[in-house]
Amino acid sequence: MDHRIHQVPKHAVHFPTSIPSKQKQPSITFREVLNEQHPLKISKHASERIRERNIDIPEKLWHTIGEKVNEARQKGVTDSLVVLNNASLLISAKNNTVVTAMDRGENDSRIFTNINGTILIDE
Image (cartoon, rainbow, N blue to C red; front, side, top):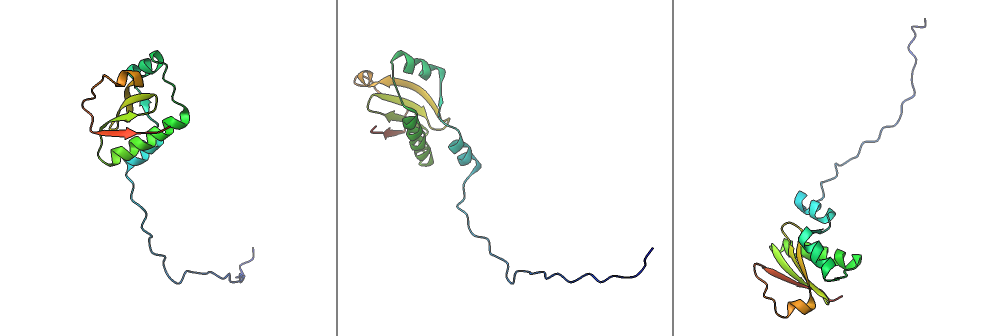
């Protein structure tokens, strides 16, 4: 057994001369992250109405509706009316859920209550 001490070559270790300061990141809440990750839910009632009334909403338009509902929610809207070219949707912005759907023919004689925001979308 060799009890001699062997010299190990020194390795250069570089330490930063200054500690980087924390950059301010835009604050985003956990709820906002969840809302951005989850698309609109469609209630059973709304799903039936969309099917019965042959309302066709392409995926890209659903994405746009979801973005606008998120914007409305950030402005304090809890229940919104989304008016499209061919239909209207009542959406709970608070729950991110489509509550019901009507085609434009039905809109003429309808009164919308319990909404506190309207979103107009041109397709």
